Image 1 (cartoon, helix red, strand yellow):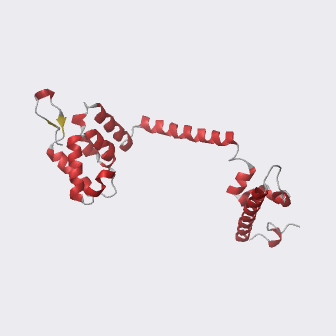
Image 2 (image 1 turned 90 degrees about the horizontal axis):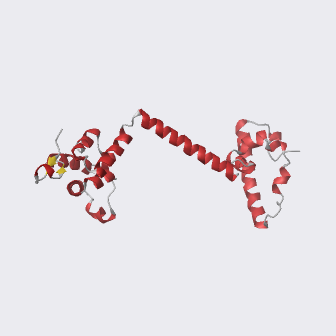
Image 3 (image 1 turned 180 degrees about the horizontal axis):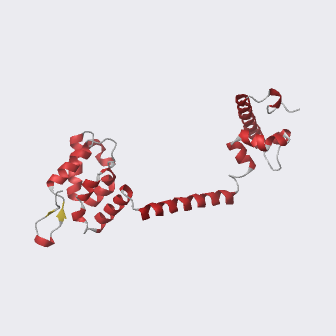
Length: 205
């Protein structure tokens, strides 16, 4: 593995990647398509040689920004080349962040799992609080046939086409149109499942 080089200035000089390391990384990345480039560089990133020049410039000028933009494309071996620059806070942060994504520890995996579960629980609580997702109308729209089998066929179908209190005429017409679509979906599923025609929705006596 190539060591990070040190610029002139002795022990206190700023460390940077070796020319060989920068060359190898820039060469490999330049062959990749669909990488992000700032709008100002779009016209100059049309072919591999131009992209390579952009990568080399950024690796020499601002390693932290390079890691932010292209770190996810680096291999674990390439990331190791940046370890000699970890005294820089930003670079160290990006390296730790990238490694936690590429090779998460068991503790990090547990933490992610808990975070996902908490987000799902919060979203479910919001849906329940809003009172829409679990309303009968919403459930019928999501699964019209299942709703019909377990609830709808025991209800008076004529009530669904009646105007509701406070509802505008235009809203009633829209709801009737939606109702006709749901009925057709239920009937299509009944036909697919081989339900007797006398039991099709809309054929109730």
